[in-house]
Amino acid sequence: MTTALTVSDRRRATLERINRGHVSDRQTDSDRPSVRSYGRRPASTRRAAGTETRRAPEVLGAPPVTYYAIAGVVAIFVMLGLVMVLSASAITEANLGNSPYRVFGRQAVWAGLGLISLLIAARVPYGIWRKFVLPLGLLGVMAMAAPFLPGVGATVNGARSWVRIGGLSIQPSEFLKLAVVVLAADLLARRGPETVNRQATVVWVGVLAAVGAGLCLAQGDLGSAVVLGAIVFSVAWIAGVPMIPLAMMSAAAASMALLFIASSPRRLNRFTAFTNVTEEKDHLAYQTYQGFLSMANGGLSGSGIGGSKGKLGYLPYAHSDFIFAIIADELGFIGTVAVIGGFILLVWFGIQTALAAPDRFGMLLAGGIACWFAVQAIVNLGGVTGLLPVTGLTLPFFSAGGSSLFVSMTAAGLLLSVARRLNAPATTAPASRVERPPRRLRRSR
Image (cartoon, rainbow, N blue to C red):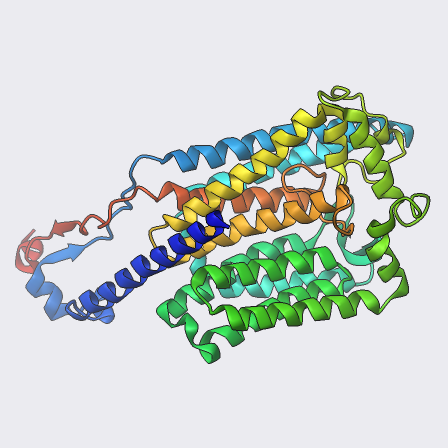
């Protein structure tokens, strides 16, 4: 409780600091030439000035400890995830007559692509993403329609949420998460101190959450719908949207989710199976029960890499959404504590990045990504441990799935981009002015 109050107080203080800077910037801008004057000036003005203004390069300070901590946790997670994917899938693939490195090879390729995307996202100033919010949103919506195209879409466990082209499988909802967190951060950054205005802010927050979650529910993917709704509402809370309308929208979203679950007896039975694992261990709760056996087999220090028996065909999807059970089996209690502790550190440093962000958009972007990782990890781990229903969500950075790994690494790159700029000088360097000779002298030459 004390920690929650501390975070809430620091959030409020950060908003006050940023809002004061927002007002100060607008007052200062009123004393400067108009925005139009920063474009192409009239010829007479250019001749009178005899100078040309160039945009100043970005000035960055030394990377803070937060930057290295986030980078270190993500690097360890990706490398350990590759090892666990190989361990969890090799024997199963070999028994199917495939190469034991088939799943691992695909995951390694996506990890390489994700590393490139992470480095680009970390290096490029995060504010540039605001220029592409509308194209990102449109692409995200169009991508969510792709699974319904004949010959392209694929249904897995009752959810038509996959696109398969040749040997390539992509889950569009993963890319929609990235688009939604940028859209929500940009929307609420533009509102500034006016986030309490219900018509200007709360309605649009509800629309964004409804569209994102609704598209996932249309595919039958409840887990992604929960994560998308959580991303929007967490960004809204960080931005200072009043709690009463947020609570009302959250209650409406929960009601819609329950109606969606109750609309299908099969879906309802699968959703409630975690409440009675013992009786349903041979049917609806088979996967959860086998996960229990794998975790129990790990003990304190684990059975060692490659020593799990659950992955021999007893535990379905051992390399994807139930990879945490294999981690608990092969790395034991020590390994599970390390993985959970790593997620806690990643989220904590993400929150610290948001609280120290230099501007409103950076604060909302970092906070939204941190909450995204937290919610998705909680839902996945809750399903594996039997505390929550199994939704099929991947464990970020660990589960086999190229879309999830690529998008998670890109989001981590955005988080690093914000963290990299925490020590930036409060005022940017003035634009350099290059002296140009008078027109008469240029003509005489």
